[in-house]
Structure formats: C-alpha cells, structure tokens
Amino acid sequence: MAALCFMLLMSIFSTFIQAIPTSINQGVARRSVTVDLHRNPAYAPNGPQQYYRALKKWGVDIPNDVDDVTNSFMGGDSGDTNAESIMGDREYLSRVGFGTPFQYLNVDLDTGSADVWVFSSETKVKSPREDIYKIEKSSTAELMNGTTWRITYGDSSHASGKAYHDSIDIAGIPLHKAVVQSAVSVSESLASDKDLDGIFGLAYNLESQVTPKQPTVLQTLKDRLDKPLFTADLRYQSDEGAYTFGYIDPDRHVGKIMYTPLLPNSTFWEFNVTGLHVAGQNIWYLAQWRVIADTGTTMMLLSPDIVNMYYSAVPTAKQDVAFGSLWTFPCNTTLPDFKLGFANGWVATVPGKYMNYTGIEDAPGKCMGGLQPFFSEDFGILGDIFLKAVYAVFDLAGGRVGFANKELDL
Ligand SMILES: *[C@@H]1O[C@H](CO)[C@@H](O)[C@H](O)[C@H]1NC(C)=O
Ligand SMILES: *[C@@H]1O[C@H](CO)[C@@H](O)[C@H](O)[C@H]1NC(C)=O
Ligand SMILES: *[C@@H]1O[C@H](CO)[C@@H](O)[C@H](O)[C@H]1NC(C)=O
Ligand SMILES: *[C@@H]1O[C@H](CO)[C@@H](O)[C@H](O)[C@H]1NC(C)=O
Ligand SMILES: *[C@@H]1O[C@H](CO)[C@@H](O)[C@H](O)[C@H]1NC(C)=O
Image 1 (cartoon, rainbow, N blue to C red):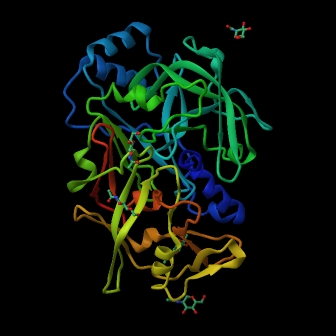
Image 2: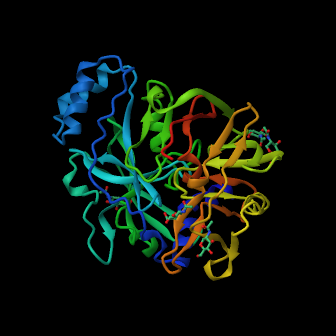
C-alpha cells in the first residue's frame, strides 16, 4: 500500500546511513537554538498576534487569556519557522512547541508522512534525551484513552505509543486540542538520531496511523491559516531556511511561482514531471514520471533508468558494490546540473554542486551522489537534494504544488 511505504522515506535514508556509518559526519551543521527573526513584510498589523509572537519568540510563557484573545481576534493566521540543516543536510529541523506552556522541540517537518510524534517522558530509551515532551509539565495534556499508534518504516525501524490532546505552536500559530502522538517505543535507528526530537507529518491528504482514526494536525492547522498553504525554502548546508504557513514569502523566491496539479486522489504531494535534462548533453528526455515532493527524505530517489541516464554523463561515477550499490565518484568530480521539466513549461535546475551529497569517511576522496535509484515504488521522490534548489509551495486547497526559482548559494 502506498501509504505504508511512504512513512518509510526517512528510513530509506537510514538504510544508507547504516551502509556508510561514518559518512555523515562531514559538514556538520550543529543544532543551535535559532530564533528566526525573519518577518513577512506583507503581514497586516495585528496587535494581539504580534504580542503573542513576541512573547513566544523570547520564550516567555503565554498567559492563557492572551492565547484566547489572539485566537478569537485573528481571522486567519500565518507565520514562519526555521528549517535548520543538520549534519550536512541529512535532515532539516524546525522549532515547534508542544503543551502548555509550550515546550519547544526540534522536529522534522515531513511532507512524506502524516503522523506528528515526539519523544516524550513516556519514551523508553537506553540513554536519557535532553529535549522531550514532558507530558506531566503540560497543564493541557489530555490522554486520549484507548488511542494508540504505530508507524513502521521501510527499513523496519518504527515508533509507537499513545496519543494526547494538547496544544501545539507551529510557526507562531497556536493550535488547541491537536493530536500529539507520544512515543512509548522507538527503534534504535530513530533513537540514535540525537538531534531529532520528533517528526511532524505534513502529507497532503494522508490519514495518520492513530487508531481509532483522528484528524491529523495538518487538518487542524489548515482551517486556521490565512491562506490554506505552506511553503518550504530549504537551504544548502545552512540554518537560514524556513517554512512559512498561511502565506508565500516574496523575499524567498525569484520570479513567478509555477503550479502543477496533484495527481487525482493523491494522499501525498504527488505530481508528474515531464522532462529530464543533464547539463552538457543536447537532449531532453520527455516522458511522464510520477514523483512526490518529500521534505523528510534526504535524497532525490528516482527510477533506475533516470539515475543511469544522469550518471552516464559522469565518466568517473560508478555504482559501488562496496557501498550498497550507491552511486559514488571521486570527490574532485565536477557534476553536471540536473534539470526537471514540468508540463507548465517550468524547468527546475538542481546545480551540480547540490548533486554531490556527501563524502564517505570510510573511503577518503570518495563522494556519494544525491541522486540514487529507487526500486520499490512506481514513483520517485524529490527529497531535499531537489527541494534545496527551489522554493516550494504546498497548496492544500488548490490540490497543487508550486515551484519557483530562488537565489542559491553556489
Ligand atoms: C481508560 O479506559 C479503560 C478501559 O476502557 C478504563 O479502565 C480506564 O479507567 C480509563 N482511564 C481513564 C483515565 O479514563
Ligand atoms: C478517485 O476516487 C474516486 C472516488 O473514490 C474514484 O471514483 C476515482 O476512480 C478515483 N480516481 C483515480 C484516478 O483513482
Ligand atoms: C502521470 O504520469 C503517468 C505515467 O507515469 C501517467 O500514466 C499519467 O496519466 C500522468 N498523469 C497526468 C495527470 O499527467
Ligand atoms: C581527481 O583526483 C585523482 C586522484 O585521486 C586524479 O587522478 C584526477 O586527475 C583528479 N581529477 C580532477 C578532475 O582533478
Ligand atoms: C563533494 O562534497 C564533499 C563533501 O561535502 C566535498 O569534500 C567535495 O569537495 C565535494 N566535491 C565537489 C566537486 O564539490
């Protein structure tokens, strides 16, 4: 079932990590508590809202009455949050608050899954974790008795636990009685990522794994937004990236946003691309390839024919048996740009620099490509390697994705 496979995206990458245990230590962007002070100039002034945000930004507890005032006085809501690169772009983490007062955790906003779960005071772990959702410290946490969840990822890593109704602060937008999934059991591969405090699913129209069935956080959030959309501006090895909710940030893109409809009945952010081009070759390959836009997957994972086509333009690249048949090349290789065409005429360019994912520490001088083959589904995954190169709009009401160029750090 597509839905199940799709929770797996992060773990497809974990498989790669396991194959290359030390490869991800280069270019480490350490987690720091960044407060994103970037402001949207298009905001209409809203006193209570600004006050609320200011309190939140400086970590002041929000008195309950202020919270209520901001809720009732705001027509629609909008805001932004950071998207900070962790460990050479292995993942991007964002600050999201849980409970009352809000406890801020670094979670992976993941457009490829629908569950919102966090490490909590209930999570059984071998070594204590610093940042967890302390349920007993939240005055608004209410156990949803009889409600459970379990996610199994592709490499058989998994998380499971209980669910609470509690408050969430996403991008300065307070949600009440949202479904917060508290992990009781988490597999070692997830627990070993010390930067990750949880995963925040934002898949288009996918149900969460909570039983009995509950609305997803995204469904709860959607009705609150000024405009029913969010955007991702992931940045190459940088903590300057951001997600915006409820508005499009004109400062973060260049030129027009070009929209592509989602495929019928999509539960993911799934659409077709219609052309491929490798810089330096004078041919465009035209066909239809189904892909999903997935912020929770590190790499760009496409069908083997596309991948072979790309690396055939890189004479020094080879599928390396020593490294789980990943495509590798000498680190001094200059990679060509990779272009994807859309039916609306727009062309996305992933610069050659971005196509080089990382060095392999066990094999000095050897690097690994950000484009790798994906065998197990009939569609491909445009993960972070692709998304870093574009400004992406996830339009919930329109059932479409939009892409635009942005200034890149090359
Ligand atoms: C939860 O449900 C179980 C059985 O349905 C019941 O025995 C228990 O008292 C309930 N707990 C709370 C806190 O409501
Ligand atoms: C979409 O869902 C509707 C209703 O379930 C169904 O009738 C239709 O065939 C589906 N379309 C596709 C392309 O799967
Ligand atoms: C998308 O591409 C698939 C082939 O991968 C094709 O069967 C389908 O008709 C396309 N859908 C649209 C809406 O273009
Ligand atoms: C890359 O390094 C290898 C030695 O490791 C050398 O033989 C080759 O000429 C270099 N290529 C370029 C393009 O610098
Ligand atoms: C590829 O990435 C590695 C690790 O970040 C770096 O050492 C290497 O210089 C890069 N190669 C090129 C050609 O950019």
